[in-house]
View 1 (cartoon, rainbow, N blue to C red):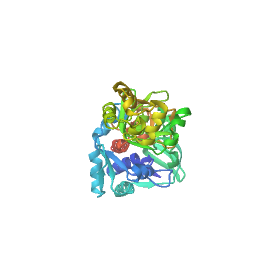
View 2: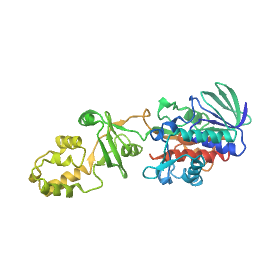
View 3: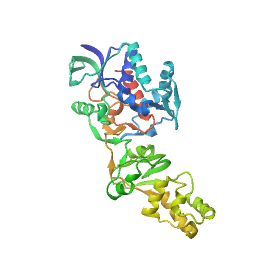
Length: 392
C-alpha cells in the first residue's frame, strides 16, 4: 500500500497532523496499535476533555530548549482550535484559570477529529501494530500487522510512557534512536508524590482530606491550587503541577493558607476564644483532622490565652512554610505526561521535521516539550500536529 503521509499514533497530535495534511490533498493513513483512537482524549478532564487553555504562552512549557515550542504555538493558537470546536457545535465552558472543557463528553472531541479526517479522506486504522520501520529509496517502508505500507513522509505521534494501561509504550523513542536522534531522559510529570517512612505513617490515615488552595513550592517555582492527601502521599492540582519541577532530594514547601496571614488571624482568635485550644482553633482554618495531626506532631496545643504574640507568629510562619519530604512519585502508572523525550536539537521548530532524516517528523508528547496541567499539553499536540501537517 502506498500513501503520501503515514502517521503512527491516533492521539491528539496525530489526528491533527492527519487532518492538516489531508486538507492539502495528501493521501494520509493513521495507524494505532490501540483498539480505538484518541484514548487519552477520552479519559482527559474527568471525561470532559480540558482541550486547551486561553492563557497559553511558551512560559508554561518545560523543555531542554524553552524556545523550541514558540513557533508552533504562535501559528496555531487556542482560538484556532476553539473555531473548530464551535464549527462542530460542541458546547464548552471555562472552568478556571483559562481551562476549557466540553459541557458534555470528551467523546465529542474525538468524534470531531475523526469527522474532520473523514472529510478530507484520511484513513484511520486501529488495532494495527507497527513491527518494523526502515528508510526506503523514496520515503519509508513500514511493516505492520496488516501488511507493508510505503510512505513519502512518516510522522511519529506515539506519545510518551504515561498511563501504560492506555497502551503507552516507548516505541517512539526507539524509532527516534533508530534514525540517529538523541532521546533525553524521561520521567513522569503531572503526577502524585509519594511519602515513605515516618512521613507516610504521620499522614497516611488522612487519605481523602483536601485543602482547596495551598501554595506548593520547589526552588523558585510555585503553584497555587488544591491539595489532596492520598494513601501513599499527596496529590491534587498544586502537587501535580509542582511534580514536573520536583526531583528526588528537592525540598518541597507548602503554604497551607496562602490567601491570609495566619498570625493576625490567630491573634484575633485569641481575643475571641481565649479558652479554646490551638488545635480546635486551627480546625476552623484547616481541615480538622489535619489541624489535629499538625498540633500532635509539630506545633503542640494549649489554650489560646497562654500564647504570646511571638508564639502565634511563629506558628503562623511554620504553617505558611510546611516542609514535607516526598520520597518519589506514583510513576508513569498515573502520570498525565512524560517529561523529556526526543531532543528538540534534532528537529525543526517550524515543521517538526527531523534535521537528520528528510521526511521524518516527531510531534506531541514524544518530543521534549511538556506543558503544565490545564489544557496546555493538548494545545502543544494541536500546534505541533498542525506544524507537521502543513509540510509532511
